[in-house]
Length: 136
Image (cartoon, one colour):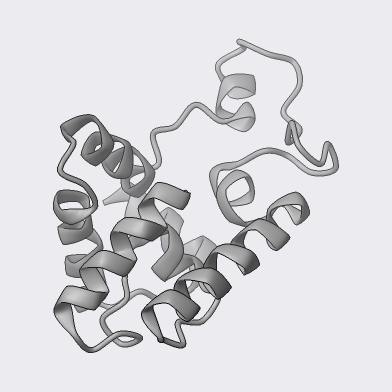
């Protein structure tokens, strides 16, 4: 899977169980089918980012539209852009307070819904993952 290789290049090694949980997150992130498709697009990395559009010749500008400092690839647009740091920090702080958890600020959990090691109770993990999906 090309997407898996790209995610691992961005995030480091991802185990088989973690991939299974990320794939399950596509089905459980929402009751709405179009939102499930959106999560699948994230997992499969099919969003049209400035970098992809530039490679297709659709735009000459491949820079991130928020910070305008680095190329806008998927991991930057969803996670690494400095303009998003405060956002993700506040989202995690709020969810951790509401659910009384201590989930770390990590793209594997926040973007792909891999929370099994961070939240043991399945119902809480699913509710937390759905809230994270809505935030992404």
